[in-house]
Image 1: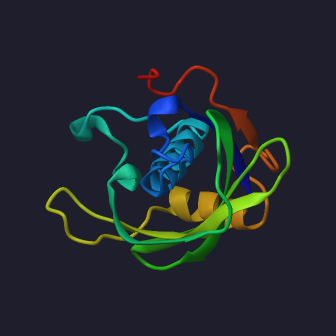
Image 2: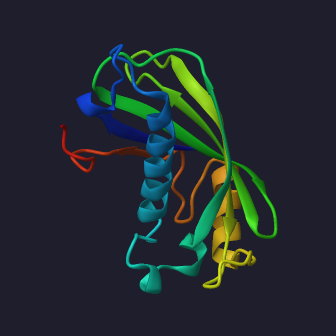
Length: 157
């Protein structure tokens, strides 16, 4: 499992003072990006991007269980659920970092695409990384990776 503390800013809250439902998907995406960065596959221009980072989101399912009521951080946990020839399903949980209370959970399916936008198979590196994540470890022997977003999020509005 990969854990990421994602910063939540005031401008992400709805008029009721809760993290807006649409922002959970953004924080899950940030955690996915952080995972790939941790593995040395940083985000560059599309032309220079690693082919395994060329993907589209096919499906996103989120079940909301409890509100996040203040700026701060949200803990995102990503785990590898299922790997197909061209698709990958990640389960996620969004939680309050202090309490561990589950705020939302769900899954996200991505499909690797080639430069023309057609589905294409994952590389051996990606398959190894995904299997490691499913087993609770990442390439390089890291287990249960935790990361802190620090000041990497957008500025508050």
